[in-house]
Image: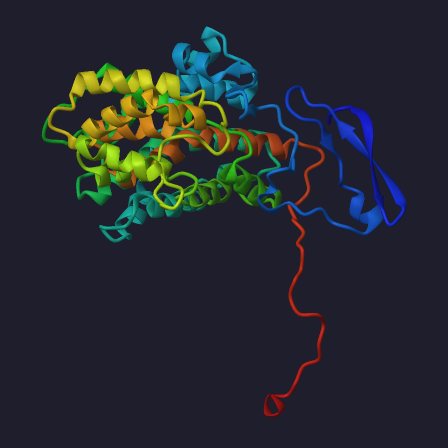
Length: 431
């Protein structure tokens, strides 16, 4: 816990209450209100918890006003450009960048855990063919607790470690199997001679009838998507994982809860919404019409993939993602893909239009990741499962951190009750 720096005084009905304040490494100071109810008999009111620190953490820091995102102090731009996903996973899990030997050992450990229990295949076959891959992932990940009994005891540090590795290692396999099942193709087993991103692409796009070679440009773009989505501080799905974990739930149930929360279109579905908007626009010649609608305050239309709720300046992940988008589109071409033609032209127009600069509506990571995934051949229904795959390490890191926190207690938000006051029951014949 941070040291007390000073106190804030809250006066209620003439009575003053001193509240401790803490100074973070970065960001605004925090007022400690944990004893406010006991001392003053009042709650605070903060719908959405947008002004409430629910925990202390050493993992990820965001400054939305300045466009800053760091993991363990390292800027996301440096990590995405110079590192790779499994190295970032190690950093998030253990707090420091690994040595060459540590990284090799960690990569080997993850690689050796990529297969799932053979009997879990039956879970996939129990879903309808048209089931959304996210529905499949929620069910299958939650069911892992029925197969891996040796890593469900949250009080055992070794079991926590085993569960962490299993989740990170098996999530690409589960996501790929959910995709294969949805399109009626046979499951493809992971291969230990491929890197994390290449393995995932092969499991998604190869078929038994022929060999599949993973293009290194596509693998690098996929790895960057994973890296740029690895963790994002106390967002809705991460907070869901922490809240579920506070009850003592097993790790697989907690991560399944996070996947379910991420499924919401206001959270994990942003890149899917962006692609659907591009398809609605249809052709580049219609872009001026939609730009005009975006500027019209009386029109409910919004340009998806531009601006960000947290980042009021620019999305620090977008620059690196744009580089990958350009590389992928150069490789695959956009000549025969109207959606990608619209995306390229819309990006150009938005970056040159003073309105977007004034409003700070720059293309964000969802805009570019959606373009990349579409160009690779993923349907929009797979965008959020890929997000869940990437975010698993963030959820697991936050889960581990919380369980090691001596201040851990079960989450119990309060409320501002506005219902009926206490009243007496009336027999049915008298109502």
